[in-house]
Amino acid sequence: MASITATATALGGNGQEMEGDTPIGVARELGLSMDHVEIYVNEEPGTQGQQLHDGDIVSFQPAKVSSGISPVTIIFRD
Image 1 (cartoon, rainbow, N blue to C red):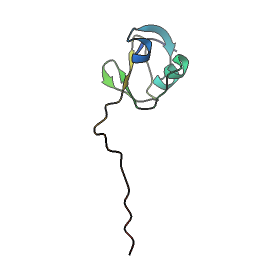
Image 2: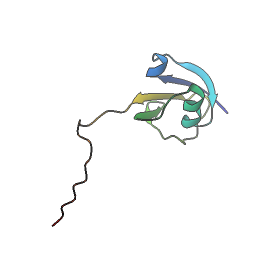
Image 3: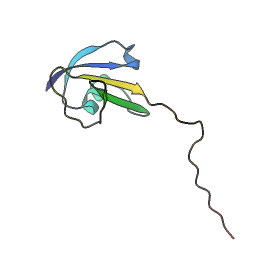
């Protein structure tokens, strides 16, 4: 396991030293929901399954909403 620093808004933005192999594993360890969350590893966009290395900084940030309109499917019938 890699020794990493994890930060999240849910943690008050403070870094927490811990060990983890992937961002999803770190999120589970911290009890964080991955709904509407963007992952960054060393300030670059990351993925849930990305392999972590010693010294990595993993950040969980709220996903930005691009609009207040949800996608809708409209079906026209004759």
